[in-house]
Length: 98
Image 1: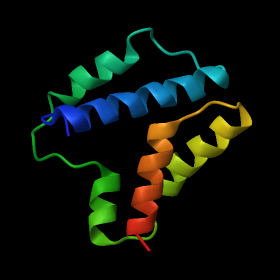
Image 2: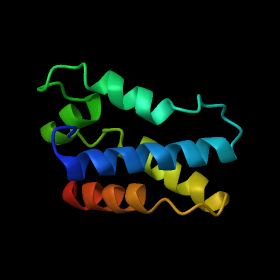
Image 3: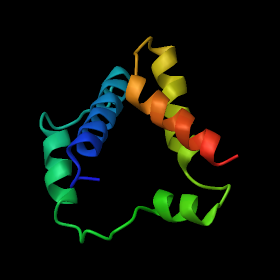
Image 4: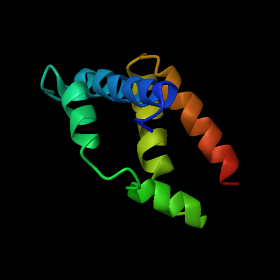
């Protein structure tokens, strides 16, 4: 995803939205956590997949989409925080897994 500017931007937006929700729940993040995480991700081999990607590709209904996406959406609503990218991606992934 980091090799494609559009996808990299989406990943960065998702991380920023996670930070917004976390901060609203009093999670203390390093000020540059998004950039540090992106730099760390660049060190992984190109073909590396997350556990979510592996489960989703296998059609495993027990994948982490609802755990992460659904929970973040619920928490954001409780705090009245718009998380447009997470909501869009979550919706697309869930419609594909049905």
